[in-house]
Structures are given as C-alpha cells and as structure tokens.
Amino acid sequence: MKTKIERYHWRHYFGGVAVILLILQFLTGIFLALFYQPDLQQAYASVQSLYRGLNIGAWIRDSHRWLAFFIFAAIVVHVARSLFRKDFLNYQCRISWLTGGLLIPPILALLVTGFILPWEWKAYWFMEMVPNYLGSVPLAGPVLKAFLIDAFTLSRNFVAHAVILPVITYILIDFHILAVLRKRKAGIGKYIAKHAVISVPFFVAIAALAIYIPMPTEDPDVIPMPLEGTYLPAPEWYILFLLRPFMSFEAPMAAFLGIGLPLTVLIILILLPFFFRGSNKRRGDAEIGSWPYSSLLSRPGRKHGKIKLAGVVVSFVIVFVAAMPFGLLYVETRESPTLGCNSCHNVSMGARMGTPPKAFKDRNTTPLVDDSQWMVEHWFYPQVAW
Image (cartoon, rainbow, N blue to C red; front, top):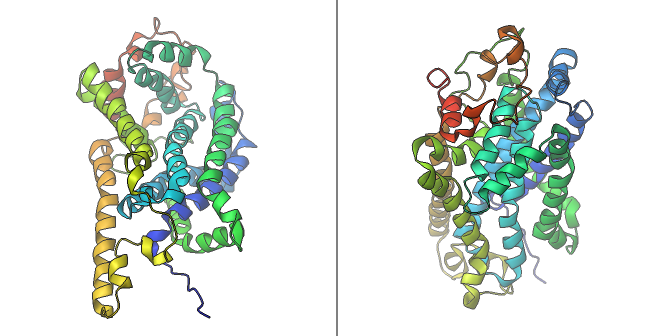
C-alpha cells in the first residue's frame, strides 16, 4: 500500500498565509474596536489614547496597519502563482477561482474604511477623495458620488468596516477555501496550524515594523516631518495607486487608468474559467499533476538535477511575475508622504487643524475638495500644492 506524501513548497502557501493574516487582522480589529469611539469629536482622541495610556494598544494598532499591507502582498503572490499553474482550467477549482477574484473589492473597501476611522486629516482626505474617485465612473458616477457624501457618517463607516465588510469577506473565504477544508480528514484546524507555522517570518516582520515604524499619532507632543513616510511601503499605497492617474492625466484618461483598466483586468481574471471552458480539467490526477513542471517530475528516468533546475526556473518566474505589480506600485506611489500629514494638520497649528473641518461635506464652503487633481497633488507634494 502506497502512502501519499504531502509535498511542502513555499510557492503553495501564500494563499494560506493571507488567510492567517486575515484572522490576525480580525482579532486585532476586535481589540481596537473596544477602544474606538465613532464620533467626529472623539474618534482621533480615542486612537491617541492607545499610544498615551496603553503601550500594547499602540503596538496592536500599528500591527493592524502593517497586517493590511502584507495581506495584500500575499494575495498578489497567490494570484500570480495561481495564474502560472493555470488553476482556472481546473473544473473543481472554478468556485474557488471566482470567489478569490470577488474577494479583492471588499478587501480594498476594508482598507479605505480603515483609513477613515482614525479621523485625523489623512482620514478626512480619503473620505473626500474616494467619492471623487468613484464619481468618475461613467453614467452612475455623479449619483454614486452624491450618495457617498450625503450618507457618510463615522458610525456608518465603522459599521461597514467592523461588520458588513468582514461578513462579506468571511462568506467569500468560506466558498473559496473553508468549504473545501471541511471535507478533508484533518479539516480547517490542520490547515490553520500548518500555515501559522510557515507564517512566522511574516509575524516577525509585522511585529518589527509596528515597533520601528509606528504611526505618528501623538501630536502635538510628537510632530512628524512634512515628508515623513516617503519611500516607506504602506497599505495606503494600494489605494493611492488607483488615485495617482488623477494627478497626471485629464478626467477621461484618469478615469480609464484609475477605474476602467483595473476593473477590466479584475473582471477578466474572474471570468477566466469561462473563457477557457472547453479546456477544463477535472482533478483526478495525482497532486503533482497540477504543478507547472509536472511533466518533468512525472517522466521516469529524469535526473534529480534536472528536476531541481526546473523547480528553480519555475520559482524564479513566479517571483518575477509577482514582483512586477509591486515594482509598478513602488514607482507610482514611492513619493507619497503617508506619515507626514500631522506635521501641519495638528492642534498646535490652530483650532481648524486639530480635526477635519466641520463643513467636510459642504463642497461650496471647501470647493478645492471637488478638484481631484489638486487633492492628489496636495497628498503627494504638500510642500508645493497648497
């Protein structure tokens, strides 16, 4: 009787790493929700209290932020690996593929609503800019923009971030992987335990970054420099990448590059199993058959050196493909001073600067916030665009 040996490889586990990090994100989010007050006057003070009265609270908040960055990074690598080994051709993986693609919008929405919650000036900027961004959608854009501005309250944003979006994300993750794991002998427990062990390097990186690159949330006692955060990776980069075209191009082209093109790519990725419907494969072969170099490993007589070389080549290709989006992300967003807003927008600079203006929904009182190009320019180059 042959015993099936489970094969471990680093390329196979970035999806599992993303799940583990999402669990940690959920747990740290529960902790932060215990202290957060979704009130325009108290929200920022409640976040600051984590830094001034509870040291572990500050570390958990900063870990929560860095978790968001690594979750998306793991997802990008997972998608690249899945594309390379053509998982969309597998008939039994169709639901997993579809739900995996559908997970991207709610995770992006979790990022945006999470940025808004602290309600310091950066949060206000996102609150004003996101409706402008979605307002560029053809036909439905103006209505969508008006709805988001009129319906926004901090408490609704909190409910969306802490309840609605996590529920949607959990349902999709259940269809994506958990339903499959429940049918296995060891089930979800073994999957989580195994991936928790291999996620240790991510845990260490997140813990270290939370200590050495915390958010500057102790103003006016600690004031950051205006351009602080430039060239430092941040979860804001994922959203800023979509907003960046509005600074360099006029409205039609900016809308295409910032909304149309990313949405088209996402839809194509989601629908890949239907484009290749005639090539669908049912999972009946050995597990090794799904590997991109399966022919090399399944043929008898191949030397171990050639097999190892093939694995190295495939690994290099996957790393290269996964690194391309991060390279583009870095090129477009590296100049973003994601930590510097409080250098000017803090209580020591005047009454209006401590928290966002009370007329934040009134585009007549603050007409500049209707100018998407200026909003993005002020974010990237605050020393130039006032």
